[in-house]
Amino acid sequence: MTTESQRMVEVYRKRAKRYDLTSNRLYLIGQRTMAYKHLALEQLALRPGDTVVDAGCGTGHNLPLLAEAVGPTGRVIGVDLTDAMLEQAEDRVRRAGLSQVELVQADLTTYQYPEDVRGIIACFSLTLIGEYAKIVERGYEALSPGGRWVVLDYRLPRWWPDRLIPALGPMIAPFGGDTSMVQRHPWEPVEEAAARHRTLTRYGGWVYVTVGEKAGGDR
Image (cartoon, rainbow, N blue to C red; front, side, top):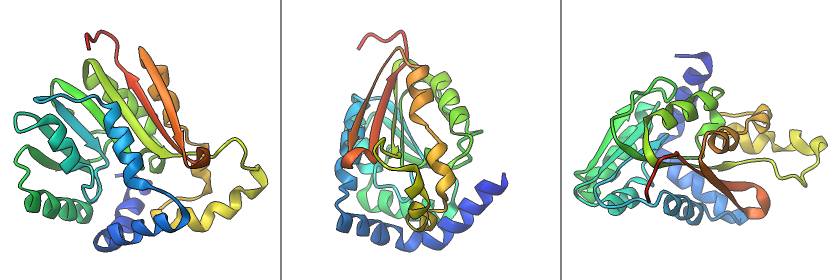
């Protein structure tokens, strides 16, 4: 495990039990996190019976929605690096009775995807990982033809002055990051490897959803 990964594990072990509650505070500054997640999930265009991977599933907010999309014959795999976050996700899955959901503790840079993956989604996770391009590349390798890679995350809007980047530090720090993360652009490898792609923005450009479709699909 890299130093960065170990630091993230330590941060999210401390935050896991209160993560959902503290994340809801973002609504106080106008963010609509679940609306953004619904938008991102729609871009996967999943069908009953599909296999989908939630890359960096955290406490599992996406898992019931993904399970509904793929139905009882589908397969939902939630992957996260932190054991404490997965414990919260496991509670959510158990309460909802989601038999088609499985949880895996793994580093996304080395995670071994199953065969015939139809969709991969990463919500607010890739910017936290320095090797995000490697994760995107390996994900595309695993996707079936026509499968979709979807990333929901933050980025610096074009209108934000560089001189004010340090002011973002206090907002990023609780999530284990620092202002160097503004130089990370996970949407770029998603777009570059796609046969077709598009990017949607929300919250004044601070939030984006990028979807890339692998070549060779028929739907």
